[in-house]
Figure 1 (cartoon, rainbow, N blue to C red):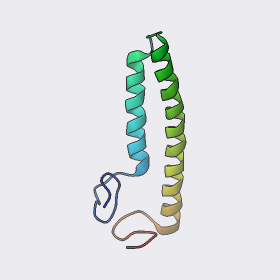
Figure 2: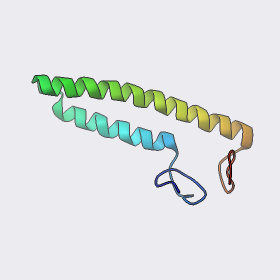
Figure 3: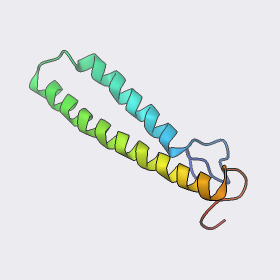
Figure 4: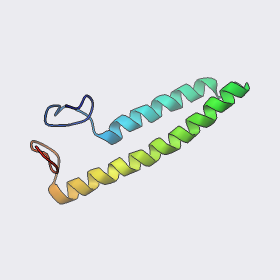
Length: 86
């Protein structure tokens, strides 16, 4: 069973890209709080977060592409799984 993502057992779950967007926003919000801190540790954390933000954005695009492929091939999600095993 999935905890966060939409599935047969969790029809009220979220699309992957929705969760990734929330994570990206949370990281951006945290970055705003430390962006003026010039200590080396803060600079390293911001640099790491910028890399993570780039990777999250790439992951969002991939998740959106998967959703588009499934929607185009099988129609909107709902009820039975569109691919894979039940």
